[in-house]
Length: 329
Image (tube, rainbow, N blue to C red):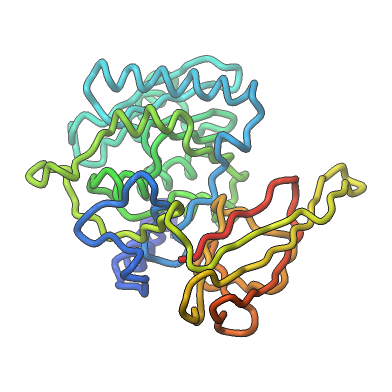
């Protein structure tokens, strides 16, 4: 089986997975409507939360470079009135190529990333892009993520996430976190791609706008997404205290956190689940809570219910000084 056949098999399997109905909490699901600004939106399928780095993970000097390059393609997008624009940079910082999705011209797979790669190949005869960095206004779709992997890019950076394009902007798109594919880099014998999402996200989201109030538009889709309101009043209150912090022999800092879950409501809560944020961040060890089959989701490790006024204790060790935030789903 050659490389191109392999990637289409992978995408077919992924399509089958995301096409299936899955269990999700209808209380926290927008069906035929959109997640709003206060929601943390995800697709209703296991493995559907992004593991991309965020701007908070990037040193300030490096982030400034990414923001400058992202602002450049956003300016091009606005000038050409096209949503999806991509650029490719050489490892020495030279801008090599631009590509944009020209509304299905010359064909429907001519996405911004594909056009940028094609343009660079036509201009410079490049067959592979080891050491090159790709920027794109919107997170790569399944097809483009596969193309980026096969092209051996070093870094990929985007502004707007796929889950927000679908769940908050109501824009037709494959319900797919690109990191679900990027994280399989070892299976195609390439180096791990550095994946950074949400660079100038506010500006990028504003450019994509919204189709939620434009149901006759060709891009409109009625989303079916999990929308967890991280600002709502929680029946189960989670309070955490850092109990210790240290640096190991490899100069990696760790901290230990102790948490108390309190039922501040008037009824017993049975089998609660909790969403941990930032997404994709996992503790080195945890006790009192156990991971479910859904990414970033946790359940009580014992005592399936918490009565009014009762408490439940948990704790964990994590790299760095920042705690995980837990929200009742």
